[in-house]
Image 1: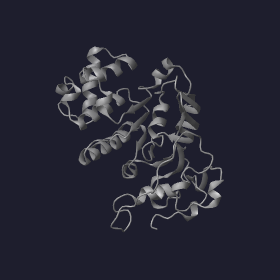
Image 2: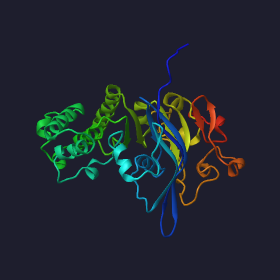
Image 3: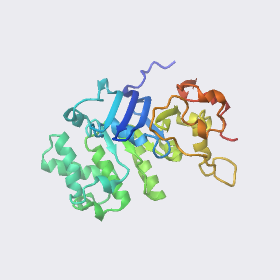
Image 4: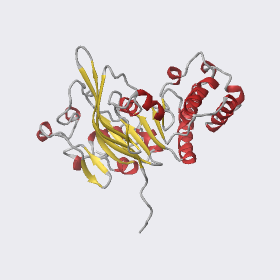
Length: 331
C-alpha cells in the first residue's frame, strides 16, 4: 500500500451556472457544473459547438461582461474564491497563476504590436523584470515553444508568422509567468493536421517540464484522448459524463458520449460514419429533465420525468443518464 499523499486540488468548481441576459430572453449557457482539477493533471472538456465549453473556460478567469452575464456557484483556486471578485483582484490571478490559450490567434494578437511587445506586456504586468531582462525572457519563451531564430521573430508582427507560429506565440504569452494552470480553448482549431500534432505534443511536453495542470477544450474526442487524464463530456450546458480518459473511451455510459465515439473514423467496423440525429437543445430555459432525450435511441417514458443527477457508475466515473447500463459503443 502506497503512503504517498494524494495530489493537491488546485481548482474546485461547484454548481457553476452562467446565463446571458438580453432584452427578449435569457440564454442558460452553463447549468450546474461540478469538477475538480488536481496538481499536474490534464482535464479535457469535449462536446459539440454551443454546449458551453468555451463559456465555462472564460468564466474561470473572469472573462465575461458583468452587465449581461449572471454567474453563480463557486470557483475556488487553491482555496480562494474567484467568482465575484473585483477585476483588479482577478488580474493578479489571470496570466500569473491561471493563463489561457485562445483558439484564434489572429483575434487575440494585436496586429500593430511586435511579438516582443505582446509577450513583454504580460511580463511587465506580473513581474519586476526590467526592459533588458524582459527581452531575454521573451527570447527564452520563444525557444521554449519551439520557435526558431527567436531574436528575429520577436521583431516581427503577427501577420508575418504562419498560423502554427502564431499559436506558439499565444502559448508563449500564456506561459510567460509560469502559471500553475493553463486553460486551452480549442488550441488546434484552423491548423492543418501536422501542425495540430506538433501543438498537442508541445503542450504535453510543457506540462511535464513545467509541472502545470491543464484544461483542454475541444469538440474532437481524438484530441482529448491523446492528451488528457480525465474527460468531461458536456451537452446542452450540462456535464453529462466524467471519467478517466481510457475508461470513458472503452466503456462510455452516456448515449451522447457513445455517439461521439462512434462518429470517429475507424471507431466501429462500418463503411459509414455514425451521426447523432436531431439538433442540440435551445438554451432558453434551465433543463429539469434529460436534455438529450429527444435525440436518444435509448430514451424511455421514464426519461420524460426523471430529474437528472450525476450517478456514480464506477469509482471516478459519473454519468447523467437513467439508462446508463444499456449504453454500448459497438451497437
